[in-house]
Image (cartoon, rainbow, N blue to C red; front, side, top):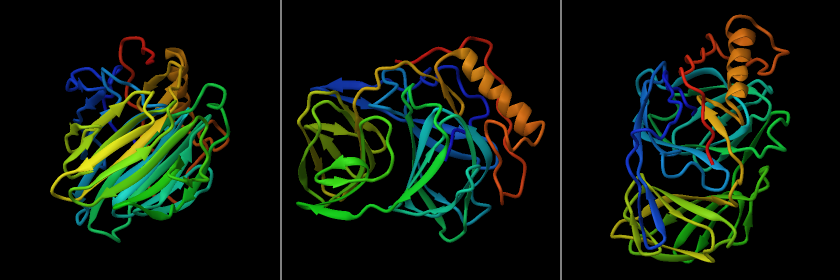
Length: 326
């Protein structure tokens, strides 16, 4: 999934729910974001927001579903990205992915689909009808300045599911609990799915230099003794050597993300990440001129083969200068 807001804000955090902080754990509450266009669905967005823009290099988290796909389903036309990686992770459903590197893949539950946009890419996403429900998360990582102009590419990885005590763990990015993902990262990162049985407490050793977040998909969960509401993120700053995660009277499922603080300012608008207002303006102009108004497969964003339909025009830029995020 991608950001299909027809009027993306200059600062996505405006009017978002306040987060709360207690006992070293910050609670990042989601806000509902209706996405216009063909997909016409609502997602729960927990990053970015006013009180926190990044967790490590993780800069964007949309959590959606379960959504009924028995009707027209999801049909996201080709659209652009720059300066980031998209991490697609499903709990249920199936999505067909096509991009301008020539990659064609099916996104399925428990399988990482990682797209590195680098200097520029475009891709489409269409539900296949193989499943009646779509449920998952779309996450982005910001590429560090020295890597953000790399050539785009696509990777797929199916992580093993291990038992850690009474918890099932799938490590799809980075390393955790002795498991290592071969998927490419450009800064120290971790990403994993944890499935806890009811009334379970698991203590996870983590990298002390990382900040971490847990996104609760289902269940009643606490992080280091602090309750994290369903669909919210519990954030833990650097300095922790372990995370204590506990479930309530029902099983719980969550995503654990983390990484070393990026240490850079980014400018993020629509599906572009740059470093300045003018750079993002140039990305939008290139998309409109090379793809929407013409067919230039040799341009910054290339071309998507096999998708039937027109690419998605970029929204109108706001009448203010885009501001960087720390």
